[in-house]
Length: 209
Image (cartoon, rainbow, N blue to C red):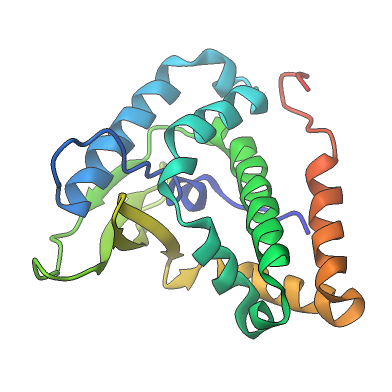
Protein backbone atom coordinates (compact mmCIF):
# COMPACT_ATOMS: atom_id res chain seq x y z
CA UNK A 1 0.00 0.00 0.00
CA UNK A 2 3.05 2.26 0.15
CA UNK A 3 3.26 4.92 -2.51
CA UNK A 4 6.26 6.45 -4.24
CA UNK A 5 5.46 10.15 -4.11
CA UNK A 6 7.88 12.87 -5.30
CA UNK A 7 8.43 15.89 -3.13
CA UNK A 8 6.31 18.25 -5.20
CA UNK A 9 3.31 16.01 -4.52
CA UNK A 10 4.13 16.05 -0.83
CA UNK A 11 4.48 19.80 -0.95
CA UNK A 12 0.90 20.02 -2.06
CA UNK A 13 -0.10 18.79 1.38
CA UNK A 14 2.09 21.17 3.34
CA UNK A 15 -0.52 23.84 3.81
CA UNK A 16 -1.40 24.38 7.45
CA UNK A 17 -4.01 27.11 7.53
CA UNK A 18 -3.25 28.25 11.02
CA UNK A 19 -2.74 31.07 13.46
CA UNK A 20 -4.84 33.70 11.68
CA UNK A 21 -6.94 35.71 14.12
CA UNK A 22 -8.93 37.40 11.36
CA UNK A 23 -10.34 35.83 8.20
CA UNK A 24 -7.68 35.74 5.51
CA UNK A 25 -8.07 34.86 1.85
CA UNK A 26 -7.22 31.16 1.35
CA UNK A 27 -4.52 31.88 -1.22
CA UNK A 28 -2.82 34.30 1.17
CA UNK A 29 -2.92 31.66 3.89
CA UNK A 30 -1.46 29.02 1.59
CA UNK A 31 1.44 31.25 0.61
CA UNK A 32 2.30 32.61 4.06
CA UNK A 33 2.14 29.32 5.94
CA UNK A 34 3.90 27.38 3.21
CA UNK A 35 6.75 29.87 3.46
CA UNK A 36 6.84 29.25 7.22
CA UNK A 37 7.15 25.49 6.72
CA UNK A 38 9.81 25.92 4.04
CA UNK A 39 11.84 28.13 6.37
CA UNK A 40 11.79 25.35 8.96
CA UNK A 41 12.83 22.76 6.37
CA UNK A 42 15.77 24.87 5.23
CA UNK A 43 17.07 25.25 8.77
CA UNK A 44 16.43 21.78 10.15
CA UNK A 45 19.42 19.60 9.35
CA UNK A 46 17.85 16.54 11.00
CA UNK A 47 14.88 16.53 8.61
CA UNK A 48 17.20 17.14 5.68
CA UNK A 49 19.23 14.12 6.79
CA UNK A 50 16.13 11.93 6.83
CA UNK A 51 14.79 12.11 10.38
CA UNK A 52 11.22 10.99 9.63
CA UNK A 53 10.11 11.22 13.27
CA UNK A 54 11.00 14.89 13.42
CA UNK A 55 9.36 15.43 10.05
CA UNK A 56 6.21 13.71 11.33
CA UNK A 57 6.22 15.96 14.38
CA UNK A 58 6.37 18.99 12.09
CA UNK A 59 3.43 17.69 10.10
CA UNK A 60 1.42 16.88 13.23
CA UNK A 61 1.88 20.34 14.74
CA UNK A 62 1.77 22.55 11.66
CA UNK A 63 -0.47 20.68 9.23
CA UNK A 64 -2.73 17.98 10.63
CA UNK A 65 -5.13 20.28 12.55
CA UNK A 66 -5.97 22.10 9.33
CA UNK A 67 -7.05 19.23 7.09
CA UNK A 68 -10.46 17.60 6.91
CA UNK A 69 -9.35 13.98 7.14
CA UNK A 70 -12.90 12.75 7.41
CA UNK A 71 -13.77 14.22 4.01
CA UNK A 72 -10.42 13.11 2.56
CA UNK A 73 -11.12 9.54 3.68
CA UNK A 74 -14.64 9.72 2.26
CA UNK A 75 -13.21 10.78 -1.11
CA UNK A 76 -10.61 7.99 -1.01
CA UNK A 77 -13.29 5.42 -0.13
CA UNK A 78 -15.72 6.53 -2.85
CA UNK A 79 -19.00 4.61 -2.82
CA UNK A 80 -17.55 2.16 -0.29
CA UNK A 81 -17.80 4.85 2.39
CA UNK A 82 -21.48 3.96 2.75
CA UNK A 83 -20.54 0.40 3.68
CA UNK A 84 -18.76 1.56 6.83
CA UNK A 85 -20.54 2.16 10.11
CA UNK A 86 -20.03 5.52 11.86
CA UNK A 87 -17.48 3.91 14.18
CA UNK A 88 -15.64 2.31 11.24
CA UNK A 89 -15.63 5.65 9.43
CA UNK A 90 -14.05 7.29 12.46
CA UNK A 91 -11.35 4.62 12.68
CA UNK A 92 -10.70 4.74 8.93
CA UNK A 93 -10.21 8.51 9.01
CA UNK A 94 -7.73 8.19 11.87
CA UNK A 95 -5.76 5.40 10.18
CA UNK A 96 -5.75 7.27 6.86
CA UNK A 97 -4.44 10.36 8.62
CA UNK A 98 -1.64 8.30 10.16
CA UNK A 99 -0.83 6.76 6.78
CA UNK A 100 -0.55 10.16 5.13
CA UNK A 101 1.60 11.57 7.92
CA UNK A 102 3.99 8.61 7.69
CA UNK A 103 4.11 8.69 3.89
CA UNK A 104 4.78 12.40 3.59
CA UNK A 105 7.14 12.74 6.54
CA UNK A 106 9.49 10.42 4.65
CA UNK A 107 9.36 12.71 1.63
CA UNK A 108 10.01 15.92 3.56
CA UNK A 109 13.76 15.42 3.43
CA UNK A 110 13.61 15.67 -0.38
CA UNK A 111 12.93 19.41 -0.34
CA UNK A 112 15.50 21.16 -2.51
CA UNK A 113 14.51 24.82 -2.92
CA UNK A 114 11.63 24.34 -5.33
CA UNK A 115 10.15 27.59 -6.61
CA UNK A 116 6.42 28.09 -6.13
CA UNK A 117 4.28 30.51 -8.14
CA UNK A 118 0.71 31.23 -7.02
CA UNK A 119 -2.10 32.04 -9.43
CA UNK A 120 -4.76 34.70 -8.80
CA UNK A 121 -7.62 33.32 -6.74
CA UNK A 122 -10.81 32.85 -8.74
CA UNK A 123 -13.46 33.05 -6.05
CA UNK A 124 -16.35 35.17 -4.85
CA UNK A 125 -16.50 36.47 -1.27
CA UNK A 126 -19.48 34.21 -0.53
CA UNK A 127 -17.82 31.03 -1.83
CA UNK A 128 -17.40 28.27 0.75
CA UNK A 129 -15.24 26.05 -1.46
CA UNK A 130 -12.33 27.31 -3.52
CA UNK A 131 -9.39 26.02 -5.51
CA UNK A 132 -6.05 27.67 -4.84
CA UNK A 133 -3.83 27.17 -7.86
CA UNK A 134 -0.05 27.17 -8.00
CA UNK A 135 2.89 25.90 -9.99
CA UNK A 136 6.00 24.28 -8.56
CA UNK A 137 9.20 24.55 -10.57
CA UNK A 138 11.50 21.61 -10.01
CA UNK A 139 15.25 22.10 -10.10
CA UNK A 140 16.64 20.64 -13.29
CA UNK A 141 13.27 20.71 -15.03
CA UNK A 142 11.85 23.41 -17.26
CA UNK A 143 8.31 22.05 -16.95
CA UNK A 144 6.41 23.37 -13.91
CA UNK A 145 4.01 21.12 -12.03
CA UNK A 146 0.48 22.45 -11.55
CA UNK A 147 -0.90 22.00 -8.04
CA UNK A 148 -4.47 22.85 -7.03
CA UNK A 149 -5.49 22.94 -3.37
CA UNK A 150 -9.16 22.12 -2.87
CA UNK A 151 -10.32 23.96 0.25
CA UNK A 152 -13.54 24.43 2.19
CA UNK A 153 -14.63 27.12 4.60
CA UNK A 154 -15.66 25.72 7.98
CA UNK A 155 -16.57 27.26 11.36
CA UNK A 156 -12.93 26.58 12.30
CA UNK A 157 -11.47 28.25 9.23
CA UNK A 158 -10.36 27.08 5.80
CA UNK A 159 -9.38 23.43 5.56
CA UNK A 160 -7.85 21.31 2.81
CA UNK A 161 -9.85 18.29 1.67
CA UNK A 162 -8.02 17.34 -1.53
CA UNK A 163 -4.99 18.26 -3.61
CA UNK A 164 -4.58 17.83 -7.34
CA UNK A 165 -1.15 17.48 -8.90
CA UNK A 166 -1.19 17.91 -12.65
CA UNK A 167 -4.97 17.53 -12.50
CA UNK A 168 -4.79 14.23 -10.60
CA UNK A 169 -6.26 14.00 -7.10
CA UNK A 170 -3.76 12.74 -4.55
CA UNK A 171 -6.56 11.46 -2.34
CA UNK A 172 -8.26 9.39 -5.04
CA UNK A 173 -4.97 7.66 -5.87
CA UNK A 174 -5.78 5.47 -2.87
CA UNK A 175 -9.26 4.57 -4.14
CA UNK A 176 -8.35 1.48 -6.17
CA UNK A 177 -6.26 0.04 -3.34
CA UNK A 178 -8.98 0.66 -0.78
CA UNK A 179 -11.66 -0.81 -3.06
CA UNK A 180 -9.57 -3.92 -3.64
CA UNK A 181 -9.05 -4.43 0.10
CA UNK A 182 -12.78 -4.06 0.75
CA UNK A 183 -13.71 -6.51 -2.00
CA UNK A 184 -11.38 -9.11 -0.56
CA UNK A 185 -11.72 -8.58 3.18
CA UNK A 186 -14.45 -6.04 3.84
CA UNK A 187 -14.23 -2.72 5.68
CA UNK A 188 -12.70 -4.35 8.75
CA UNK A 189 -10.08 -5.89 6.51
CA UNK A 190 -9.13 -2.46 5.17
CA UNK A 191 -8.91 -1.10 8.69
CA UNK A 192 -6.63 -3.96 9.74
CA UNK A 193 -4.48 -3.48 6.65
CA UNK A 194 -4.06 0.24 7.33
CA UNK A 195 -3.36 -0.36 11.00
CA UNK A 196 -0.72 -2.99 10.18
CA UNK A 197 0.94 -0.64 7.72
CA UNK A 198 0.95 2.17 10.26
CA UNK A 199 2.54 -0.06 12.92
CA UNK A 200 5.50 -0.92 10.73
CA UNK A 201 8.72 0.72 11.94
CA UNK A 202 10.00 3.59 9.83
CA UNK A 203 13.54 3.65 8.50
CA UNK A 204 15.15 6.95 7.63
CA UNK A 205 18.13 7.89 5.52
CA UNK A 206 20.06 8.89 8.56
CA UNK A 207 19.52 5.53 10.21
CA UNK A 208 17.08 6.93 12.79
CA UNK A 209 13.96 4.98 13.63
